[in-house]
Length: 129
Image (cartoon, rainbow, N blue to C red; front, side):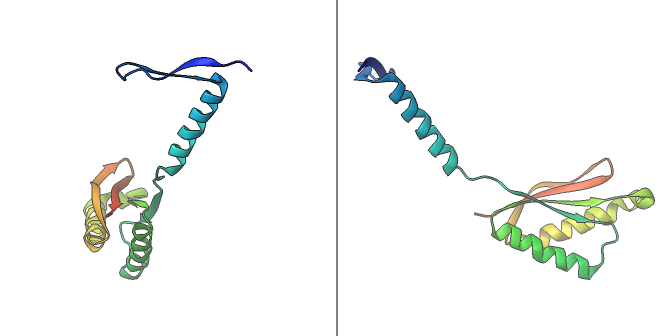
């Protein structure tokens, strides 16, 4: 069996070395990194789409979904999609998104305020810990 002199921690004073099989050392190192990667939380992004003339009932329906998403720890991307001439109602879209943010205040906080990008006005909300 072939053993190697492997430097374990070069920052230590004096540096720490072990006599072990180098391939086994690499394998264990990769395994540890994989475990660390699996433990990190993955951020889920859920989208909620509105129109500029979304009715109260539809708004409340989507609000209920948004609350559930935030409670599950997902991030929300709420957007108002303007098609055709509805781009004239930018204020309506912004009011709608701000109203959503206000309703979700106790569940999450606004990461990015409503911003118009082309034909959609987007806003991001992250869950409170």
